[in-house]
Image (cartoon, rainbow, N blue to C red; front, side, top):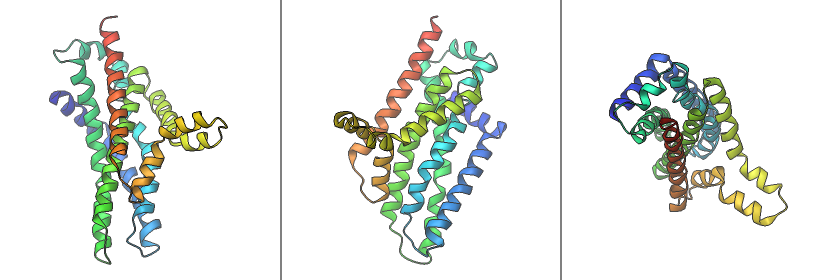
Length: 234
């Protein structure tokens, strides 16, 4: 798995995807930091963290679009499937590479918090809780994008489909509010990604939020492994 991880990290930087992702991620996070904190002379970073949910929806597809689609395009998938490593190691190696790059991106708010701490009191507990919430959100979203990449051959198609799916997950609350059947609305709300994330930005962190995002990551990575198991024996 380590070899797969190093290969993918190297590919992110040699292809320029890492630089584009980090530059755009930090650009928008800086914009939201200025608009929600500096412009109002406040050390409350909740507004910035709430806005960063949408950054993930737009940018995570850039990270995941090449994970497996690129292998098909360059005709290297069969070589990868017949390599002396398990399918779980292949999938997790690629997944962890994308997650590592994403984690680099979400560390920037700590710098923003340090800037604010020179002007006033910063609630570091909330900052760390929001970092964890963003990490968990990224773990779930990246696993979704990885599965879509495994099912598509074109990187652009993978990115577009991932964006559509992540946007649909973001809009679950809106969809649920327009459904008259209460049981269905409650079911959809129980699957809400944004409600759980938003509650953390407001200082409400609980174990169910952690379990929800981790469960999504495990389920979608498992499905990705199953996709390649069928291809290996087909």
